[in-house]
Length: 256
Length: 177
Ligand SMILES: [Zn+2]
Image (cartoon, rainbow over all chains, first blue to last red; front, side, top):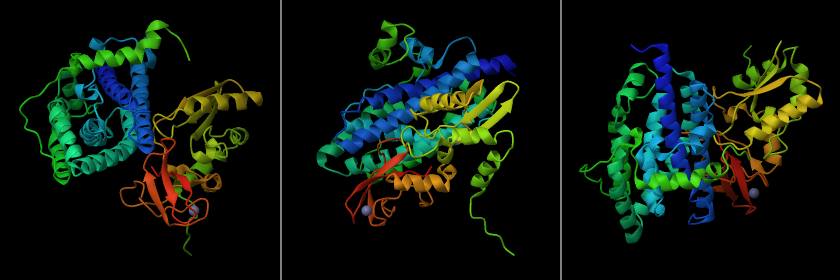
């Protein structure tokens, strides 16, 4: 049984993880702005990126409230190094080509809808409130990534090939989304966090159905990478943070 | 006799808030605060303005974001403080509340009409999944329902992009959430 204080500390770390997931993916998606294949998709990516960055602000804002030590949402976003970031690795992978980004988005969107549906039931009122806002957006995200993966997969030889390559490349990073560590187990037991290990069956059912329609092959579960929650990242996160944090690092404490 | 309510329960509850005698004047002052992206629409009619509480500590204004990443929230909070300061009301605090999550059901009837005359189609009842339909949203320019969705994501997070088959004009649709 955890004390009130331990529970608050654990909730803080958990909230920070969710904020890191949202910020890192939001930044990745924002790289498509002005690089989209056509105007509507460019705008759509801008919208989705904004949803994720807004989500990061809500989680970081709540983490700052829980920490209550003077740190703000900006401290979490701009002044931590990559070893201090605890996002899942799938979120930091480079954007790749359009197929790559849509395949990643599909895997993450299905997960997000399942995850947020559970987080709605959290005993922590703020986490439940953030989930209630975010899930409305994630439904739209999923409809878009689903349509794109089907369209590209069941498209030309080239688009199908690129989708399959992306899927094979990203698949090994998807397992980490369903891993539980001691912290997440404690919070799941306390009714605050989500037991993500129980989400994979439902996730897989949806993935199989969409991949079948997209004429894509489900990759074999023969390799997996994890470590993001412990601060062990791919080389890509450092580069991402360099760009994300450059202004704040150059002019500490600047406001704009 | 069977009574058929003309407004939703959400709207009824919201209007009841405004009728508390100690805040009536404050609500009226804040009617002048508009959404920065749709200047025709007040933050009340949009449903962003949630509640006003008066206590010994001053006035607390509670707002809620439409979408998580809505970049207008900071401007709205500043505008609220400015409007109340102009009426010599202080101190004022503005707090953002996340639950219950904003829903297009909070758009007032007046707000819906203002959206339409601004060229934005107001949200409509859609299918069971509540997502944006791919056709049939009525065109704010000519009223035709012969329209089709061009993109689920429009100029801002709260809008989708449509085109009218009759007058050929593109238009924004305020998504139902
Ligand atoms: Zn028309």
